Length: 290
Image 1 (tube, one colour):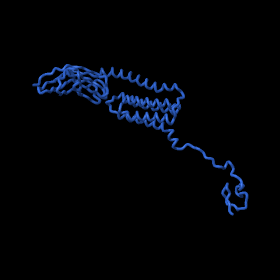
Image 2: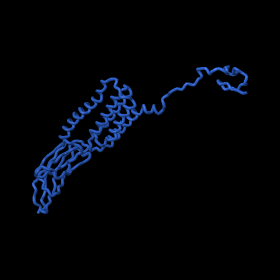
Image 3: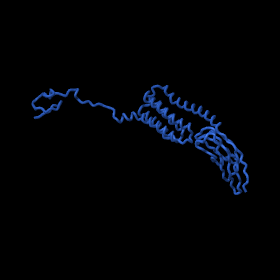
Image 4: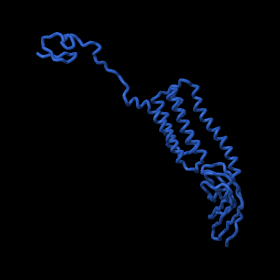
């Protein structure tokens, strides 16, 4: 009967007790060092998942830059630049907190703060960045844990909020002061008539001079009735990148059944501006066109 060595696998005669190739005793057991022992290793899947928060943080930062660069200039150049810079700084700081300092909880807070501030600056144009930074924060807590080794580092996201708003206030004050002194409106005239058929129509004209570089300027005109209610709003003039040192013509048309008694002219530098660079209220003296 043919037999085989259980150690080296050589074919042997049936009457031998030792393998003539490796010397193994055929009736013995395999040496312990040759027994296979299962080794547990990290799977490629788990390794990828551990890096998922880092990948998401990088993607969020890149998307923020892209969204900022594609945001319409009407949102204001300062707001757009602030959103881009904030996205880069917030993303990098969050990554450092997560990877270098092993502070997933603080890093998650930094990601959420960054996404929220981006949305404040560019509103719906930063929707994807906001969502991605929130997802990054959730992934960080889920895959990295929610521990905080150094509670003093909680000051980082708080400092981010405070610093950003301090810079906004300081920069906004300086910009407002400079911009207000860079536009002037004059030669205002009005020609609103009653056509005798139940309608009032006409226009308000004037000039606006620009003495600085702006990305966008607009003259918005609101018409009011005798009760102080706005009955019509229109744009008398607007321009992307108006030329410094140039004077432009303003022309705001009105047509409606309600008699306007006054109009307010406001010069703004963005679609979302709440503080006009210049405003003036004029009384409308309606004449008969019959």
